[in-house]
Length: 550
Ligand code: ATP
Ligand code: MG
Image (spheres, rainbow, N blue to C red):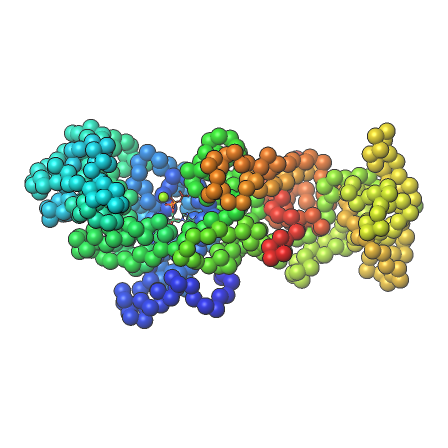
């Protein structure tokens, strides 16, 4: 369903190697493992397309796994939004909706097993003492005085921690690996810490919670994930995951790392996105300026455009930054195919056709989508008074201006050629009305001998529907937000401009939320969820101007 690509990306190459060697009996099983501590963003969309895409391509399966090891940050609202977003992107996890918290018993048993093997111990040192003893990348750490506790004592203490007999911060369970390992992650990392927190699924059952590093690889093993795809920062954790798996003797998933997506003019971190929401810099996680999947959906981006974008950017082994114009290009590309064209005037001024009979109307044929024959035609009302856009008229136009001016002729799209005879201004010189005559012989579709350079959009004034239009621009003014200290200092104050006066062709009245349109010569728009029958609200998805590759 995504765009065709000829060559394999490096992850596909690795998967095909494994298939060729009949590793895992030719099975491909991936997972998408979000932490439910925020809404998904376009970076997650890349990971979703990659994981579900690999499963589709190799007739495998992809699980949805909520990595909910951390009790304090996770909420049920996020779980629901994540499911909605993955589905909306067009992917299906079937019955395989899993939670790391479902594995808490198994993980606890794994920890006890390592204790029994002399490979884990309870450490009573304070966090500060442990940090100091850890050493630095160039200086080895020192062993904890509690490192050589007996397995019996460790088991007893760990059991007491679980039963809530020890206060938070008083003890941790650590893996007994090597305090002088060059890889800091192997210097007796934490496996469990005490937390007296309620968990959104397990309630108050647990007083100890596994660290992400102890949970992630084992969860992959429990689900027999063949290819565990993750972002580059986990490359240095891989030896630790392998150590746990080897010493537990459980299923070996193969971890493959790729570069996370960075986009220009965009922040992609749930922590930062949460700050935007909590600080009221945006109206919520689904604000149309947010790089969240729900924000993009509300903005009018389509699942196809996001999937095509993911295919176009591919996967890389090194961090880089992708031009957001490529994403916008993908959106235009899809909307161009599916969005029906509509007549709309953003900043209306009245134009009166003085030789058109008063009280008369006629219905003219308009094409719904020149890119799609099946989209058919519709009828547009035309009458003596129409709106055109203020920017389409100039009292003293320069030569290159092919629109309307005194004495000039233009075509009203799908209608007639008109000629400007006069106009009226207020005291400040603002145009109030334009007076024209029309040539009844020049109706669109009839054999017309005359050609004019300009064609204008218009809307019949007595028939027009009104709308609140929300024009969006980038949320940030700087290109690379990874290079700035405080991203909140770089917000674009003009990222949202509202206008209330737009005039639209009447077929738009009552349009349903989520419907896409192209307003001729203006841009792509979508009906917002706040829209009602009495008050139409439209979001501008993107302008027509494509800056990609220009
Ligand atoms: P964030 O920093 O936004 O919180 P995260 O990596 O902590 O991101 P998770 O919920 O843990 O968020 O991520 C779920 C999956 O999505 C992980 O496999 C992660 O690698 C992937 N992912 C997250 N952000 C990106 C990104 N920018 N590009 C590609 N994949 C991403
Ligand atoms: Mg995370």
